[in-house]
Image 1: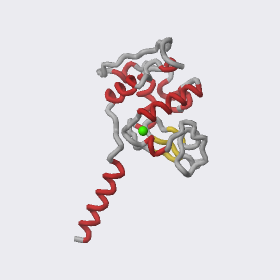
Image 2: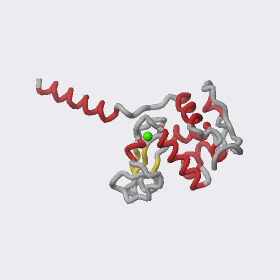
Image 3: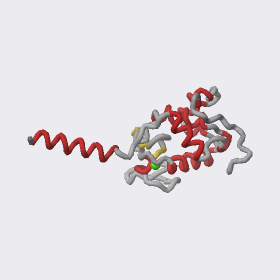
Image 4: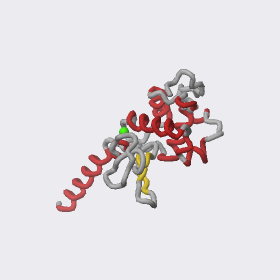
Length: 160
Ligand SMILES: [Ca+2]
């Protein structure tokens, strides 16, 4: 009996901790990114964003990675606690004015807004090592296969 209640309490705790997180399905994420205006933003396509999100987090919003310098990276785009968000531990610029934990739930509008901020300030997606390594210069149309979303590279109508 004692053991069972421990198991139940543990399971309940785990569920509360993870209920808000989500591993996105590729096309669902593609549509979400397009709707949020990332297709063509600063000349990058939804293909670039799917590629970087895949290599950074595997589309898992709850993913956290700790760096040797003590900072951590959060969420689907692995945004760093030294620059973009505040985790209450790392000394931070908090350029996105956001709590790092808000980058771990299934609501990714704030993550997208922060990612836009990153690419605007850097004037490039090479702020993400994985983008430079795996996505830059590659044919990214494969990422959108079967998603009813099309690569858009013309940025003339997007806000800068
Ligand atoms: Ca979020």
